[in-house]
Image (cartoon, rainbow, N blue to C red):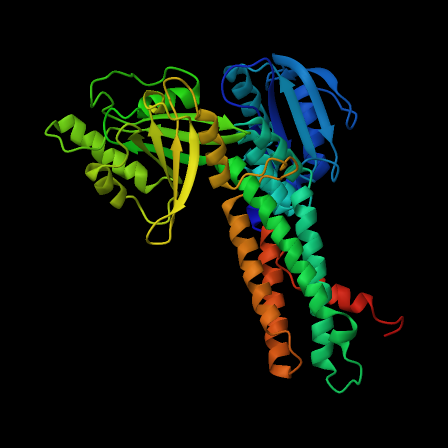
Length: 466
């Protein structure tokens, strides 16, 4: 913990701009209860009852009323930060909030009150064990949630659902480590500790549970980040019409003139609560138009960053030589769906077909009519499939990319541990080390990096007096 982590801090806790209510929050840090009492007297002229809302005036240094509102005092450790906290809830005008904020700073100079840094209140909550790291991140995710599903999942993470699953995994890994360490420490024992304790079975169950947590976390990361979907193809194949059909609004200009779209048009839509960032791009073709050339270059830049590429084709002609050239430039590893648009002009019903190409890759072709809206539901379902979304995933928790990286690392270490789960001493050493690394990866999610938890389990099982 840095020295500044114990400074008394103050900040406006509500969003910038005008609103009905604005909140100024103070966390006392090392200054303690005396600082909060001094602030209450200086600003309200009263002594407040802990955890009781009091309607009071907010006074400036001369005793003039700046505003009137609610004052709340939260003694440590029963507060958001775990420190003594004071909240002043007044009118939400930016000027009056700045006046109250400055009054707090002036009145708190004697004990070093300073303006809080971004996220510092939640940082204090983490440092004071009010929240673990995953829960602290969920606070920001809940605020930034762009869909109802994301907000609900962030709420589950904030309530500790994700952390509880991680803690359960860590506890199981620690228990298994204890068994392996005991076997290493007492190799002369006649009892085969690992066999008797079903160590391999325990490891298999841990790996199975980790796979479940990773699956839930992937869903949560998808809810948070969304999917970048780029519409690409030759001019006049219906990219703008498809964007409008997916969005349910006339966002892009649609004309029979090739090259109408000169620059990208972006729109975020929701499918089953997942944000889809759909980008309509300029038609890909050889052109002498300088403006269109710039638009085409930007199209390729967007394709390079895409999670999914929808390669639009005219259903009447299908793939031609120009489309082959376009497809050859798509980045490797990015899912591509060939969307045969204008199927209403061919008499063929909307459908999804999949086949294996000569190189062994899967080719997905989807027929639809963006103009008529026929088959657009099939496309939405295919995008969900590519994203890995599960229809019954209603209890996921929001996760970040770093969580997925840590979970994948833990899974890899457990796979290595399974490979070393033999009885010779060298393999057991490697087995124990991989379990330790898996535990560290899991602990990084919640912010617990100490090895004391393993010692705690071991010594808690000792006989009394040992």
